[in-house]
Length: 267
Image (cartoon, rainbow, N blue to C red):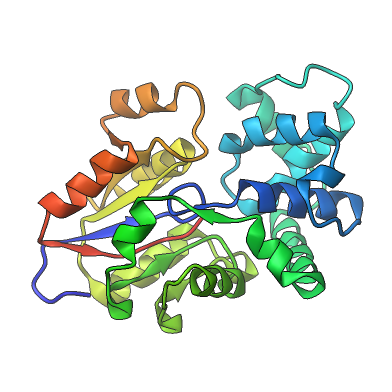
């Protein structure tokens, strides 16, 4: 953190800094099927397509299991089908396994994948460039992570791609801790609101906005257009009053705001 800044900028991770769509597809498939495959090529193509183009609906990582199960059960249908918000919500509501248990199962499946072949697991992830290079210029103490991802995966990925982290600055999703709770912890520690938050999930931005911005502006939502966004998310975000960015626009925003303290959050 910098002393004396007026605002704090928080990043989501998956879909903003890291493209983990392949790894999440494989891990969700393994969690649902009980298998331990190590690549997209081992999953039916229509299942991969259905899952990845509907990934933007997912907010909590455990819900990827609900989506993957639906893809497996409907693989004989239209592989280009994009679920409506209502259809996706119904799929999640009908899932009998509790959300916390789904999240734990996703993380334990990921851990088994890493144990089997860590290099293969790492190869299914890729940083979003050129934004990643801009953030590598920061010193470790200025990087705060807010994430639904488990801490071990965060540390491994950032280390592999050249980013040094301070572990106490990683606010993770271990044990099903939500972004809501972790944002409260960040605020208790730094007391620097309003917080600028960039995420690729419009639903997540809306939920945080509605939850925290009741009395005063606590969080200022911004949508990353290069991540796991839906076909109309940019338009809907702007209608809601949120700022939208592509990577180059966002890098320009960072450079034009020298008073902003850069922190990072992971999805």
